[in-house]
Length: 115
Length: 115
Image: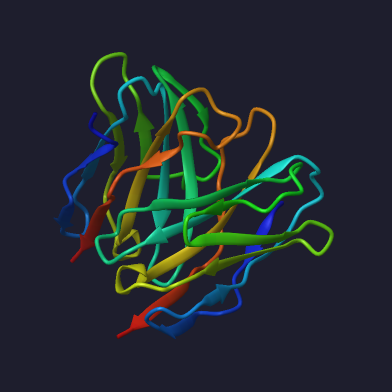
């Protein structure tokens, strides 16, 4: 079974600064996908970024980028130029490749961006 | 193009009552998933359905919980004889045919409170 661990329950950052959220996972699979989801107070689960394990290049989406270390089973999220609207719970998630569909989530990191 | 629609947004039930949660997938999506989020936790997979078929219900409690996705109409998650421990946020997601995590879209969830 896969597990996803987020070791930072809470983090805070000043507006316009950079912050990195950590995630590690455990799997014996070689083909899989990793995700970061954002859950603001509205409770909506919003996909931030997605990484395919067979791609060595780290995914980026505007101010969001990941550091994917496959051998270390690490998948951290970097948020640059933090904005107040980035305040949310952030969940790291894992999905096996192939005809799979089940997301396994970490417990989340509450990020607060301070003005 | 409406996203995944869940209703109600909030639901209060007394112990012993039944709770019915509804989910209409995104247009063009034929796969529906239900997840449960307990306080201070990430989302946990419950069940995966296609039209008129339950594909995987490995995350569903064995008793009192059932799910369906009929040929016509929304998917329904039904909880009979609710107990306090059922209080949680229940999220529905939908996707095109499964496998890559592409297009996997969540609704805003239903917060169930059992009093």
